Length: 233
Length: 233
Image (cartoon, rainbow over all chains, first blue to last red; front, side):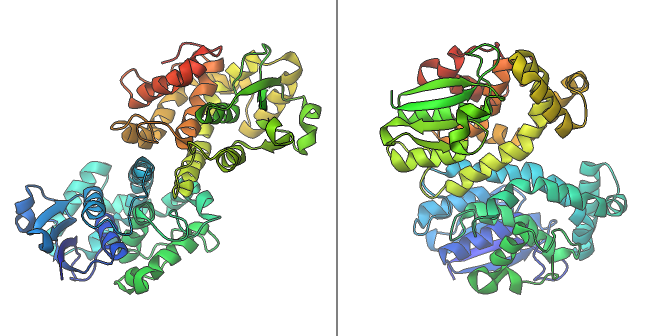
């Protein structure tokens, strides 16, 4: 085992829901690199204080003198640089992958977060709940209960926002073409987040985004599908 | 001159505003190909009936037996295939460029169109006005005058939607990196449309999208900047 990954977990050690951590796990799988995950909770800042910051994913490369890298984007770039075979980012397309990341984080995350916050909260370890409630209610300006009460109404808005992804996936298996690249992992990560903690249906059965999500869950011997989660549509 | 391009024009022959035609002109410039444009109006369907459809851009490749290609995406692919030097689409990134196109057309066009329709109408040839008013009022469900009355209020929504482009352009000159590719031409095309027919300010002076727009207007010896249009911010 050559990598250690600090991976956000719920009350159960194997309930992993962070979209940013999912990106990194799929990047490691893409590269065929062997890794072990460490379940980590929001309030366990001390465990990753060696990075000088408080967020996961944190990746420790044991075959490179325990080099630590954090931020899912920087981790992907590190992996492409240190382990160049099977690139995550196609040459000459770094900005386009970055654009996809920015789209996911500014257009999709704000729309999907409200649909998932209650699910996250319900699956958290007790010690994380106060932190999560306080920080998220501050951002949203509403209680978690109020956000959840309005969540079903937000599903249509999410579906509408997915339109550029939908149109692209109408005629291709992956954003990367015949096989996935980092853009797929980033765009898929909100759905890995969703299935881990929520039963709320997000997509329609005939949506190309749904079919792509199924393909993404099948990758690497069903790596995502085997992780604890809910059956999703 | 080896190419002929049917290019949407207003009342004045050189008032060119179609974002789709701008994409194609910038693709031809990118390839260093010599072309001549033919001013075309919405109601001049007969002039392009040889394509079996009624929209521009239509490109005629005179050095390839007058081969006609239409639809700005298909034209870009044709140019990369027939004139492979200096690719418009980086290898392995076709889906990512296509995703950018889908984002521009489903997220940006609907938000910017309402800000520009009155400007387009004001610059149209008389014979095009009825067609334009009828077709656009049907799509929007409001009169052109009503759309224009609410347009200033839509500027903020456009700016918010541009966020993924803004974040990407914070740290790079072009989506293509040090030089532009098809993703730049597509994302820029709504701004080429805007400056041709509207004085409405769309961006703030410190917006990275504005600085990129300036760079795009400087390309190819100021090709866009030299075309009739309004000073924009």
